[in-house]
Length: 445
Image (tube, rainbow, N blue to C red; front, side, top):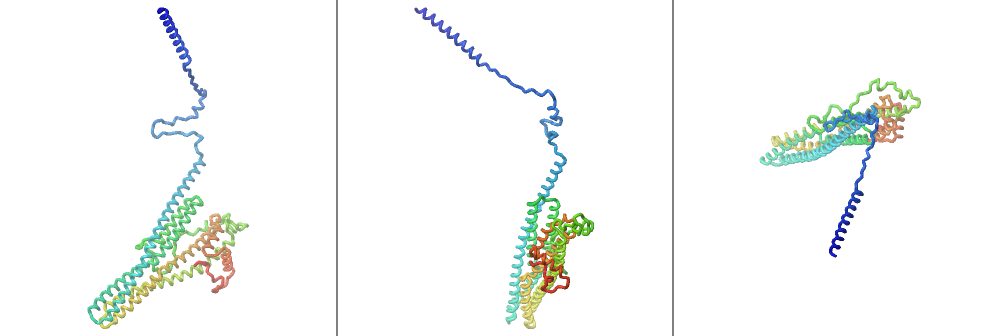
């Protein structure tokens, strides 16, 4: 019985081993990996390799050179456009640099103007206090009879009068009120230049001509309104009155390029009569306006400027002279009577009055205002003449725009400006005060 069981067990184990081996073989055969790689076929012809130029390519080295395909090479026209863009961008950068310099100058002139305005008020108050104190001391010395207090008052008043004479001489030399007016005008003109530069940057692409013009205008303003006092200060007492000039000087056009030249766009050769906003009527109108500005406005401000200059010179000499007389009278007062003391007191009082009129009334500022007004009309006259002398109408400023600017500068409307020019053109006889021909061109000043 036992033998039968053992033999059956052995047969079962053998069969199980056979089954497992057959299963493993079937599984391995089914799990065998089959893969295939598809490689694209290269073209038989060599066109692809010919289009790829690698003769000038060096790999894994510095300064690698790569030759672009012929299709990406720009044409000469594209290169010229790129150069124009580079020049335009460079001009824009230069104009921004000039704009920064203009903003810096505005800040400097504002600060220096405030400082010199403080000079005017502080020096005026201090000088009047010194003069009145010395005058009071002289009056007290005349009224006292003892010698010791009189001597002290005489010495103190004499020192104050001498110090006041020196301070007043310096004030009259530099004219603080005129210095303040110079800085105000400089700030106003630099702000105007800043606005024009910003407008040019926003409305159009700047050119090198715009950069050169802006640079010249900055330098002209620096020359017209200098910052330092020593060496570069404007002469406060010139021999003759001269209007201010804060714009760059331009040479008049030659007969070949300017007045008298025959161009295709000459008004006299055009039948339609209007080119770039200009017509014969507008040219005649501008000529009449320039004539009135020259005969009346500029002449009037020159007369007023000469009067202010003479008054300022008289006051500038009288103040220190009276102060010096007061110092001498105070020093010799008491010797041979009270005449010296009385002279010192009277001269000191008059010196205080003269000082108040000159610096408190700001006569130097008035003189500078007349200089700038006359210079303003000279600038208008030069603009009109430069446009009329340019016979190539395409190079002129637009006529309608120019007429509107002139009307705004003179404080008139366009209709008033045309009527004023027509009235002056029609009147050929001598003018009378109150008649249209006796009227000034500007209504602002």
